[in-house]
Image (cartoon, helix red, strand yellow):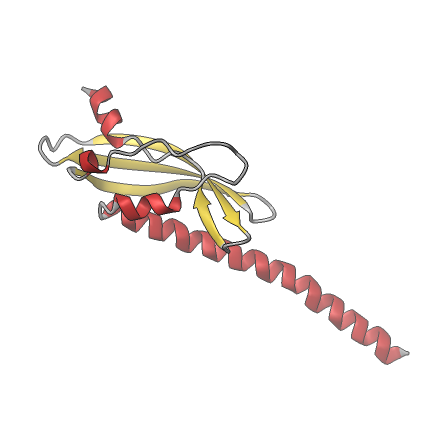
Length: 144
């Protein structure tokens, strides 16, 4: 009987640890995803960065069209995560980023701050951005 109680206690500890291990894996996965996205943005690989943008099924939203041709002349000088808040279940995150960028022809530095909403897709086991792609070109035109 003592053995059974002890085995149940050990099993409970192991099962309890699985939840926090899963949570830690998701947190690491978010960190990796944010870094990958940051690198793609910094190197101007906007087409690949767009593959991270995906609205949740059933939300009914569509990604606004992004003019990749216009973005070919836009370079990011910096892309920094300013703040990151993750839900307790590690399934959603609000990430505030600050970007500075310029158009190659003008070299005038512009800045944009964006709060991004990321969500974890259980089926695909990865994080997606549920916020529109930053309107870098439109923001430059506003600054004029």
